[in-house]
Length: 315
Image (cartoon, rainbow, N blue to C red; front, side, top):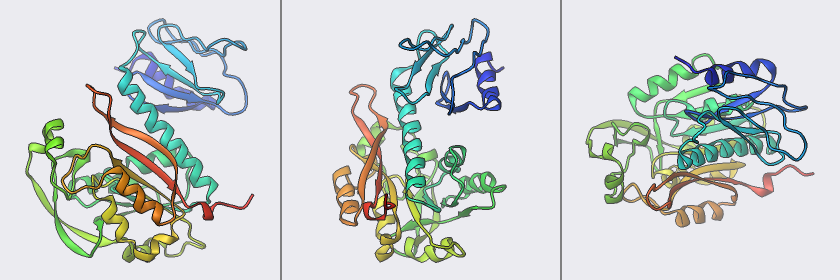
């Protein structure tokens, strides 16, 4: 059964309040143009009210933290506080998506290449945050592609492709059963020590295409294309990037999951990957942690957002 907290979050968009769910017990809420109206709930949830100048926003039965001067609040349901590490990573995902959405708007992006789409989580987040342009999602495995196809069914400007992308046109065996971490690369010793799912050895044969070979199909009928490349391919991003050839220059921005601690054999380190992207003309605009070691606090992977400065609009 939903808590009153969860029900109230579901009702808030009806009164013009944007809600971004960060997972169990936490959410970010914001509204442009004006103060928050008083919203009351039973004592086992929270009471949200606009704070007076110089004071924090209060929430009975939980907490509300003002996020700088943005007008947004971070709400938590549990009075004892959620797991801080989990909350930090959820907040980083929220901030990354907000930043990406702002860059798409600033650079006039009208087509997002969503490579490593899984079930369409990334595309759905972009839609929730207001991106209305074309999306092309690539997912090679049969079961996950079926979920992606279903997610995109009612969105006429969201196209889905059942294939992976890489350095050359070929077929390959991808490791499956790793949920959101399916990869064309084998797990490293470090990865096996961290994730029990890597003990599974199931594979599936998939089609692999080059990025520059699919661009004409994806961009067909789009006037003055300004594409953005998002890659989340579990250690294979540089192979996807290499498959863009000279047409990489057409992308005004990109996003790659870069590794500090390698989960996959043969995957590049963060420094190597960023150097390749910078050599192609992209500059970092944001870096956000994706996963951490609970015992040491070390970041395992970052989402790295990069834009081509010479493609920015002239002020």
